[in-house]
Image (tube, rainbow, N blue to C red):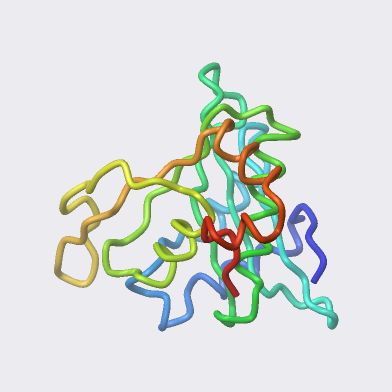
Length: 175
């Protein structure tokens, strides 16, 4: 798996990936033109995970890179095929960039309450629950709640310094 910054030519694959029917109640989606605007925004970053064939296996969107408060939002993380380690690798790349390249103090995200798989991955990575945002998304005739989660730089640094066996005890591995 190779990780790189996305380009304009990747937007069609990103757009198609987030619109897969199985993700409808798990992740947000934007029109292609909004992705193009976000890709050009200096306060945002797109990271893609590319498989051996050069196809996008997953992507992540970061926002708030220019925040004076050093808070970076993981706006979206989508993986084509779950349970193959792509999500964990992509999340590691996101955290490395947020806390390294972008000097974040806090990395935060929101996730659908019903997206147990993603919540499990984030918790095992070290994100902490901050609370539930009730009925914030209206989709398919119903309101949906989100869980707000965050990871502080100090927590990330402690996690990344832990020996492999300690990281496993802390829930630092997840396929």
